[in-house]
Amino acid sequence: MWHGSAGSSRVVTLLLLLCGGIALGEPLTLRQVLLEARSQAPALAQARAQEAVALGDEEVARTFSPLTLTLGGGGNDPRWTVGLAQKLPAPGARAARVLAAELTARGAADERRASEAMVRADARRAYFSWVRAHQLLETSARALSLARESEAAAVLLFDTGAAPELDLLQARIARGSAEVQWLTRQGELAASTAALALLLGRPPAAVLDLVDTPPPGLPPLEAVLARSAQSPTAEARQADVAAAEATLRASRRERWPTPTVGVSVEADGPAGRSVFLRGALDLDLSLPGLGRGETVRAEASLELARARQNEERRSRWTELVSSHARLSAALAGLARYSEEILPAVVKTEGMALESYRVGRSPRVALNAALQTATDMRTQAIEAAFAAQSAFADLELAAGMPLDEP
View 1: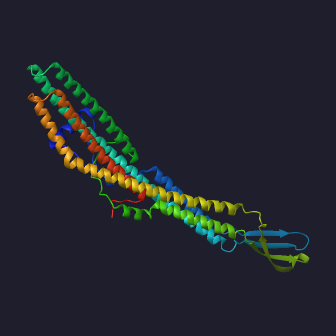
View 2 (view 1 turned 180 degrees about the vertical axis):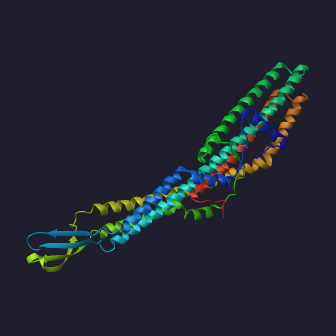
């Protein structure tokens, strides 16, 4: 990608300060942006809250039914009674409910990790959107500088009678168009700066100075597919299926007779002097063929969880393959721009301007050469952004960072 010489960079910086009012702040690296976005993202706060709710549901599943205390008295026998009753879960039902709650909490934690991957991808795109906007502004500033040089050459040739007035008018039109393009790029840079600042929890007018970094290398597709099997979203869907299976098992066990065990102390006779101990066992029975609503719902939930798991797997593989292909193409194109196209563009600009100055080529040839140079630089910048965006999509589909060991 074209970064410009030291002299042109100073010119661009001066133009930014004079016309845009944009001051340079403390350099902000990609790693800092990713960490800062992770701490500020509203989506993560919601995911953490949902995880806390799931952990609370797990504690509820571990809780036994409360004891029932019975007190009674009267003029006939028994004169008074004191009893305790405890409802017990069907064998294996409580363990299945607890397991389902644990798996649901695990799935909520995986969803929170998936939200972190989404925030990371959004932060990477916002970061390099700013970089792209800044580089496009630099390209526009360079095009404006060359347009002014060519206009000066047209004025000189017109004054000496070596060029017609048409050349002068075309030069002024080209310079005016370059100024409009530069002003447009300024607005785009301000918009991308505000978007990134909001993502980081900073004021929209905050001054940011980012450090451009080259796109990461192309990871092998087989390795990415293998790692994605342990992605947070994949594990969340697996936890959903296991939790639905445990819930179905619990609902089936809960159709078994449910015992309630009680013990009481009763007093009979005159003044209640004869005291007796009494035990009791009550069974809640489900009528055959009736009361299967909870089981039917649990079976449907299991089918839904399996369908969501299958859909997630297919969608993840599709996105991984397509993102990998886009990243491969973008990296190949970016290398071609850096190695062949942009060096030739720099030479073409100088040759076209010099040829026009000495009268060897017409004005239309110079305009075409300068416009082609600007277009090539813009395409190179877009190729770099496309590579960064494709890598963000690849990381999001994989559910985990791919540029870290």
